[in-house]
Amino acid sequence: MHFLDQAKIFLKSGAGGPGAVSFRREKYVEYGGPDGGNGGKGGDIVFEAVPGLNTLIDFRYAQHFKAARGSHGMGKDRTGAGADDLVIEVPVGTQVLSEDKDEVLADFTEVGQRLVFLEGGMGGRGNASYKTSTNRAPRQHQPGEPGEEMWVWLRLKLLADVGLVGLPNAGKSTFINQVSNAQAKVGDYAFTTLVPKLGVVRHKGREFVLADIPGLIAGAAEGAGIGDRFLGHIERCRVLIHLIDISGTDPVEAMQIVEEELAAYGAGLDDKPRLVALNKLDLADSELGEGFADELKAAGADEVFTVSGATGAGVDRLLDAVLAYLPERTSTETKGAEVEDTSGDGEESSEWSPL
Image (cartoon, rainbow, N blue to C red):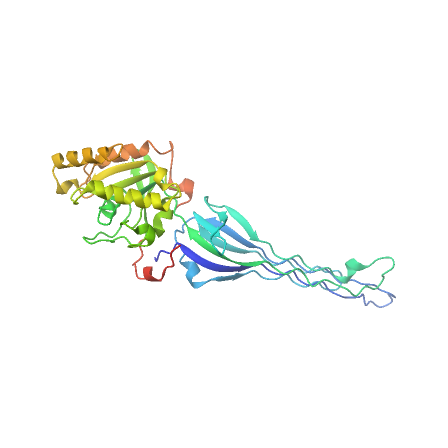
């Protein structure tokens, strides 16, 4: 499945049906009078958050959504049928933005959340409704109100409890594979992860959702590398795990680069609790890990964990610390997140339009 977290679509609610101009034509009934019915209401545009979706890929192939118009009124005082609403299903975590992306018009954070976004036009009045004591044979009617229309952006922010951040090749994919049911691609080259990845972690009878995003490099806020476009997927996380390659040249510099990019992005990411973890302990001895941990603490880290995503060493202690930041009970069901493979094959990443 390809991953897409942004899409621009056109919405138009249905117009109301026109009212009818009609007069009774019955044998032996003189001066039958008007009997034109009103038109039916146009269909609404409705958004609904549903489980089982974690990408906006469907909106790449269908960008125009138009609800049906109401039926016209008919003689014998028959009102036209109202049109069915057009329900657009979106993943939990989807935001609806204005065309210029300056305003959040809707935010879907729970399964079943439903919003009438554009209302259909009201049906027009038939000539029967214009009859008065002085106007016995009216011929006027209303055509029905037009529907509303607008362009909007859909932006998906995956719902996760914990986010993984770090430089490319920090071992984030290996780590999420070790602790969750995810099957992220692992490689010995930078930017193995091209799209966000979700996994469900089960630890000591608790469950939480872990999100892995592509690695950050210096200048990501200005578009370097993959840039910071995927940081929106960890905006709602309760805590971040900052993985640092213990075999890298300078762990302190690696931590500072990522911290600077989080601060440049804003949206409260630099204020979120952070758990710093030196990864790839299997490639270094414990003495070196302790030395690097002291350097990171001196540089501002509150607590430093040493782990190995490949062997699982030290992982339980890190997960214990994560649980302290989570509510007593968290599960994928409370968010409506049915976690699936969101890795895609990376073929379409060059066509995406960043924020």
